[in-house]
Length: 163
Image 1 (cartoon, helix red, strand yellow):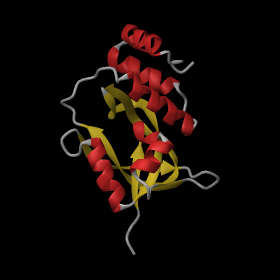
Image 2 (cartoon, rainbow, N blue to C red):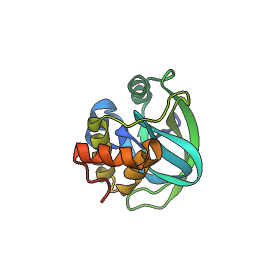
Image 3 (tube, one colour):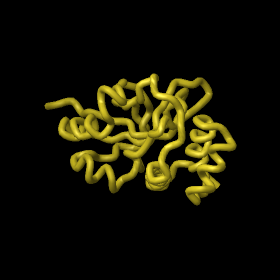
Image 4 (cartoon, rainbow, N blue to C red):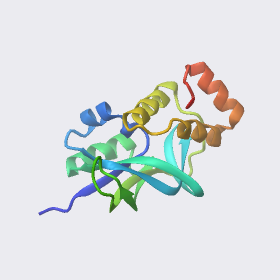
């Protein structure tokens, strides 16, 4: 019997309807928090190690075909690389369990800049799908581009900015 493969989503793959199309075999296992990891925007979302910061995530069980589709979607290996992380997953209505899961991390050579409005809205919708606090997205934007630029971005896009 094949070992289960777990995938950590923190960005656009939080959106349930998009994942249903992109990875039809994927199933949500639960949610967790990447402790010591900061969410940032480099056009698209990424995470970087940062003591004191935490990033909410969803954990999916994926098939080999799903992973192939994700590799293409994420631009692996040129845009994102893969790393295995251990984290505690809380399934809906279940007991927490620790798993090792694969996550995509953007290559460090890319610089921080604001995402497109459509991409940011997908992340807002994905955060809502999992009931994650929207202020995490706003803080990631501020950490990536600064407070003034983040305010202008949120006002231009009509986002609630986590309020």
